[in-house]
Image (cartoon, rainbow over all chains, first blue to last red):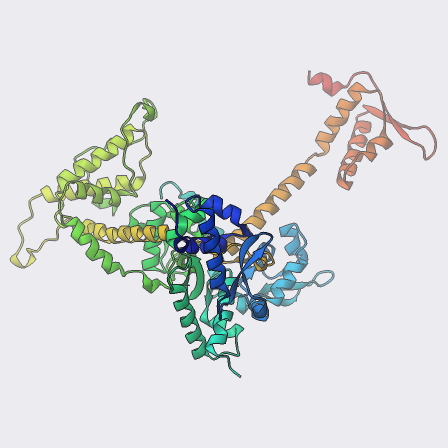
Length: 183
Length: 183
Length: 268
């Protein structure tokens, strides 16, 4: 019982699409023992022709002896634009943690943030300032007069809060950890 | 200088493919100021039809208000063979019930959820929060100002919904269960 | 349910955890179906008995409900308090239905069915249970679809899409780390004077002379150096040791003054 090329083609497309690395004909043959090699080669060839058709944004490329679905070089500029416009609520874990410390302990200085996090946080603070999630709130009247940071209006919008009092507190989630008896 | 739908279509395909999450028409419009909205919509529609063609291994879906390219469910077995993954841990019935209550009654507090389910739901809520399926949506202006929960964008993504209106109404379930319980 | 509504007579519910006479659940082969709470259990019993949810034979259902709890108990399973509250509610409804309705004026005849609130809750719960099943089947389908493999552009941006809860968790994690660090510091700093003195006593029980300069060089922090210094002074004060300097600006030696450390003796 072997598979026909027409049945095989969509499966090959799905497999190549989900693979994070170029997938070779060898590998495809191993995954699909129900297909004979000649049919597999024919199905791959048919798939390649589909992707070569006019007006496609993707191509099926042979890379390092395997197959991979990629965008076409001519759309590079648009891809770059996309990468730039990603929503600013997306933060690295370091930035998220820094933002959390600022949100819950504002107004707070950089040395104080670093004291809590135990790591240098200058870059994370800069990122958050760039994303306008935090803003300077004056200076602390101590030696060196360090800048105090707090969250911005943009922060409230991004996290869907009306005001800071809506931030969850330890008490809010205490019942969630304690009341774990039956759920 | 505006773009024609035929020029736009491959660019949209490349962008939707590149985006790591469903990308909305708004986002696409922002990336492509040279296209007018009507043409953009037409191009998206044309692209969707392309993906519906016979013999494709991929589909273009509307999820969480955006577009996303996915494999088709009928090929899952082959993909699992390649990825060597098993379906990820399923949500417990307790978590699913809690999620259903939240999805239909949002925004809703933990005590209200427990009132409907008749059982402590703290752990289920915590599981759902950790899986990002629900999120805090402010506080209820009653004594203790309890946190209100609602479903998240991740919920739509993980359950393959474009928006909440795609779910049947809760009254639909009433009719469904009435027939069963009267027997 | 209000305090006054609890039944003060009738069935005794033998549901409390028994500390003695524990039965090993391994001895039982009976497998109990698991329910998502008392409402779920009740719906199951109603379905099993093929009775109408709108006209529950309360005595029969109550008996079965209690029977289930007894079996749970026999298996040594913890019975959540919600099950007990429901048991009490059922018994209350049952007792109320047994009482003859007091004679009333005609316009008051429509006495409320004691089961009404329970029926309402069951119907409400049932809808969400059905909705949960729908979500389950949707999740099943979604588990069968896959998104593209990783691209280079993903690698460049290992970012999270954060919610308020993530923010809270991040803060909690930072605070937990801070607490751990502080405990570590305290633990380290709590090598206090008393401990240092004891340490030095032990040292002088073994050795008659110690190069204090070399000893000071072993201190890992200014604090430890200070504690060490104070400890040495203390031992000098109680005349356990005396300090000698062999030459000006030379090394300082600590010499044990007697062969016996009185405190070590006292301690046995």
